[in-house]
Image (cartoon, rainbow, N blue to C red; front, side, top):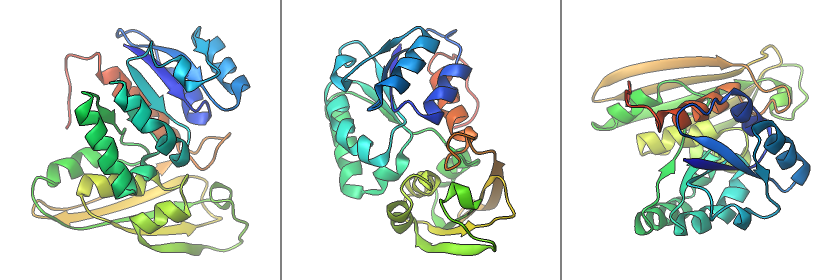
Length: 253
């Protein structure tokens, strides 16, 4: 499998530096609006930096998007129409139901697949299993340091409390986890976002209730130094998903 990456920031850098091509999967092509970033990653991976996205589409089996929700909306349908699989890191864009339906329909019509890694939260496999029954309640409380949210505060402050669909509009690059949870639960979950100068990690607390019972998860993730809005676990989840394509033994949903 030949993989191309769109968006060569912190997530893409971690993927390239941590991924070992030992399973028939090769990360080869790189595109970014900042060509220097693409060239730097291409040099590390012994790959190819392209000036236009179109320049890689004839040679890849999967595109890994790690750019932005806006970029995803621009490129997703063109990629899928060519029958190329797509891995989405900017899951928040998929909270737009009309766009999500177009993505699903285009993928089905052109025999392509869309993947979304679990990202910066734990327990998504359990939620997917629980969704076979009825999920009655789901919520996410996210607590981040001021620099992660671009704020300067001296005391804890609730920045947002409402539905995930509103949260991803107001914080499009900070709260992809809310979109992942909502899509997995098939409901617009409740979200609270707190800026807290006392924390140095991105903290996500999830509560889900339903026919299966109830569970709670909490993760305290180290943010990227280069991009504190994003947790390192998000990149690791993409690496694990990539590796799973070449594995013959799998545990979890």
